[in-house]
Length: 212
Image 1 (cartoon, rainbow, N blue to C red):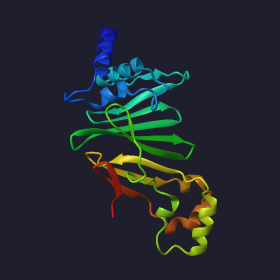
Image 2: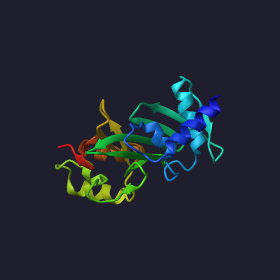
Image 3: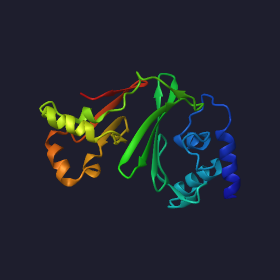
């Protein structure tokens, strides 16, 4: 019976989208594999079934590792797709359209994120004007001495910045840097007093803008 239910829900998830209300679980099931290549659609539906029945279940993925559904409601989900990657998804209305915002975070081991936005057909919105990923420089306070600024810019060739949804309605995105984990304690101490602990962003239609 459980397998029949999963197949039925999967079939519904793959039907052409109409005005019927959808949940984030529907889009989790219908994602074509760009974001969840390690999980089949049936895997994902089973994960939702287990979660909704109150069970914590680690699903075997396509790399013989394990994936777990950590959080789920009608508009938000969080999935540990492997030991090294976490995916968050938020569904929201923008005018008459539904937009899915996805944050993928890889543990490198210092967390590093990327953000993408998609329509209900899993076609990506691509525009540098919609969201600018913060750089390490954005965390510097104005009073940071020039020589320290230059030293840190040289040390951080690859910026490692984590994004996550925040707020009761998850309408904020918080960015944090990984300098404390990346640098030796003595080095980090040199810079700590000149760094903002986090940056916040807010949705504005399709755009995601800094909170000032």
